[in-house]
View 1 (cartoon, rainbow, N blue to C red):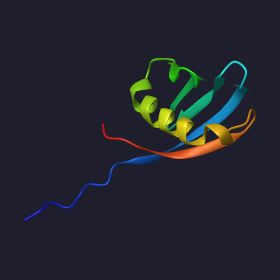
View 2: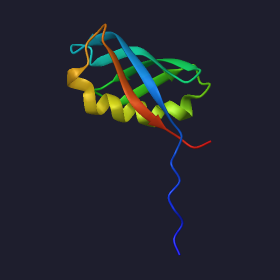
View 3: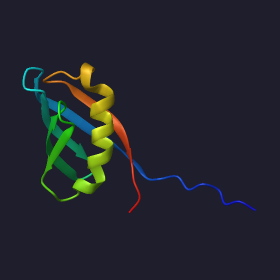
View 4: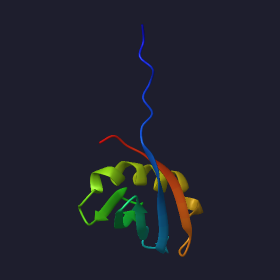
Length: 89
């Protein structure tokens, strides 16, 4: 007998791009989900993602990185974007 798969809790992450520079190879912005809010800088030429503050960073680091990699050519400064965030506590 197999167990039914548990659904992970889901919330929506809201991303705002504040700066985008192809010449510098980076995207900067803000992301919030639930009661957390962070600032990020993604250097896409070196694939380095910096997120602050550290509180709750483990929840967003990997999903935000995947979102940025998938959407990088479509992201524009001043743009607002969303993606689903699933997690276990």
